[in-house]
Image (cartoon, rainbow, N blue to C red; front, side, top):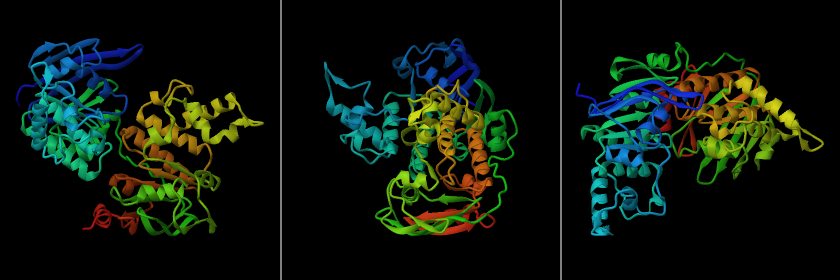
Length: 494
């Protein structure tokens, strides 16, 4: 094992009375990818901010090549060879790719920027990353995956020795993630020390050499990724043995609640037919572009279908608007909870009551006391970790934000809940809680349509699985006969 490039030793950090890091230890080695694993609130983001110079530790040491250092700000982090690729791309859409790559270190000719040198060096580093787009292209025209490549190119031109990737694949398709992994492997081969932060175990095992687990601000385990398994990592993360990631409880499958016949929407899906029964979770699996999200949006009236019929309890219904869907007992939790699922600056109380104003109003005027009581009930029911019901949703962790979105719809007592990527970007503990809520919902005689890209989730939670490919249903599988191989084969052209 070579000597560590970067070491955190017994680092501590508090924000007021909140202890974010208590005893954080981390070693990053040249030519290795280290996965930083932990639940939301474990201290991962605080570590990243300390290493990028945004926060200063209250105690402990940071060592670079065995020398104790202080990272005063982002500029010094870059000068020390530490670069961060954030989940939310730090890209200026109105500037060119080359300008974004050299945003903090423009090459100069005398007192002027050397545009020729900038373009040629940008082209060279893009070629090194096997990127096919032009350095003069406006960055606003890039995909999310390409913007991540620009951020990595920015790290390479600054001669980064430590590259931190913070949830880099959260918004990427499977193929885009594979392209990113190829670049990460190239960074490793070039001798960089890579810190990779992800909630997805399949990614960790695909790309990491080592792991470090944080829990409650403390490092609780580390080692070679090949010497452990996911059960052990989960135990370290949550402090207890998690035998069942998918707590699907048995439920009685009852009468048909929803039936869809030949539903079509131009350019997105065509002749889709299926049904969902009371007490059932229907999983929907498909690759990006399969039409699965567009189908959910049509069932909720966001983008009405062009043709076909939807039946609820054997009666045809019109779902032209979300109000129509809600009136028929349909609720929808969208994939992007921050942009579409919640109003982040608003309080938990306001978010939960918003689609339920009739229940908290008297003579057309909302009662603050009723709003607060409703929110407190659901905070307790779903175990939402918050200061109180007045806390802004923006201040909650990703898992707790998702629980608020669930609460606002469950409070309206729907019959059918459509979940689009319900556990995307949340930790294993929050995932388990969302799954438990889903199981309890169907046990009470309701139904769920659950869209997910995670095969273990689809296989673990679904009673039946509908697979889509290129806008059409390519297969429907019972729980007893569904396998990962059959599902993937139906979702692809293989």
